[in-house]
Each structure stands twice: as structure tokens, then as C-alpha cells.
Amino acid sequence: MNKLITFIGNGNMALSIAQGLKQNYKIEVVGRNIEKLNAFEKDLGIKIEKHLLDGYDVSNKTVILCVKPANVQSVAQRLKGKSRVIFSVLAGTTVKTLYTHFQPHGVVRSMPNLAASVGASITTLTGDEDFKDEAQEILGSIGSTRWLQSEKELDIATALAGSGPAYLALMAEALADGAVKQGLKRDDAMQIMRGLFGGFGKLIQTQHPALLKDGVMSPGGTTAAGYGALEKGNVRSACIDAVEQAYKKAIDLS
Image 1 (cartoon, one colour):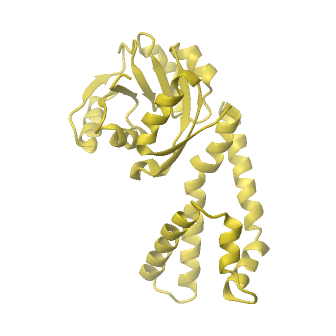
Image 2 (cartoon, one colour):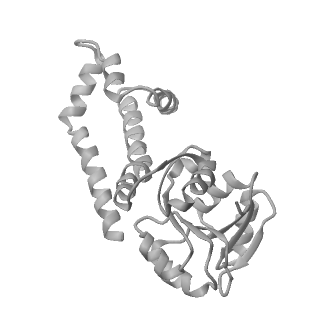
Image 3 (cartoon, one colour):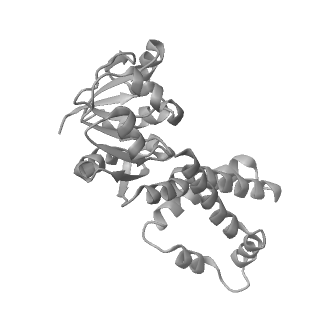
């Protein structure tokens, strides 16, 4: 495997992935602004090769594409050559679109999430199966990976795992607000909420959600009362609708 990874784009997701790769790969980054490239290098904490976008030759490079989806065509027009493979983190940008504009030898779409910044992303992948193992190794540097069989499945997974941190953040904030409303100090509420999510994150790895719920819901108890309020508020239905609407948006983007 080529140990040089070329990042096209220098935003937060590119930085998160590069943090996971910097121990085992040589990194170069390509962008539009040298000051932003220098800032990327500083945040990454190691010396890297930096290049301006216009006329940069990506021939036979292993590329991680981290630009905005709306800029795909303009970025492609400013590059030279055909890359060995593109690993794209762009929501709603199809394999066909990437082949059309960049004409690489291989394409893998991926969808990391916000937890990439702490090495705990669940990254979904699909595309050219010749690059499946390589994609799982490279993107596995920021957490776990899951290879899916179609772009439709990846768009659904985007609605679940890619957008999911925002849903969970809303619930975390609301639960803490609920405790404050009842009289708990804000700092205490926030610390308890963080402990709740930290412990739950470990439990959910090995137990079905329904079993976790049943394990804490005793007849006529506090959990049953609170759970009833969530059902009355249609939280379950709202979560299902959130995934549906996010999936539809991913389709619109493509």
C-alpha cells in the first residue's frame, strides 16, 4: 500500500482523519490558501507537505477528498492527472459523480461522523471493492468501519450515524435542562449527563436497546413515569422521522 496520503481539502474532517493517520502514514494536504494550510499543519502537530490546489498533479495518488460537495466540479477542474483511488467523505456525492469529474482508477465513498475527532467514529463505506480492505484500514484509524453494499445504504447510514451526533446532542442538552428545571445545579446536571452518555455508550455495544430499557424500568417506578412522558411526546416517532428526513436530504444532494 502507498504510505503517502493526499488530502484534498483542509477542514475539520480532514484534520480529524489526519490525526488518526499521522503515526503510520506520510501526509500531504492540498488547498486554496497557504495560511489555512499552515494552520492545518500547526493543528496537526507534525511537519507535512503543503500544496496549492491550482495545477496540482494527483496522478497515482491515494486521495482523501474532504471538500464541500458543491465544489466538486470546480476542484476537479483545478487539478491535474488521475489519482490511484479517491476516498470521499462528501455527503450525497455519488461514486458516478466522482468518477465523472476526477476520473480516478477507484472510488470509495465514506461517511465518518463527529466522533472522528476523538478516534471513535463509526465510518460507513461503499464503492469499489478492490479498495475495500485499504479503505477499512485507512478510515479505521479514526474508529470502527462498516462496509455497505450500496450507495442507498450509505445514504441511510449517513442519516443515522453521520447526522446522529446532532440528535444525541439535542437529547443530552434537553435531559440536562430537565434536571436544572427540577432544581439541580447546571454544572452538576452537565457532569451527570456526561456520565450517563459515557456509560450508556459502553452498554449499548453488547446489549439490545430494548433489554437495556427493560433492565431499568421497574413497575410503577421513576423510569416508567419518565418513559411514559417520552412516549407521550412522540420521541420514538420523531427519531424515526429524523432519520427519514435526513435520508431524503442525502438523496436530494445526490
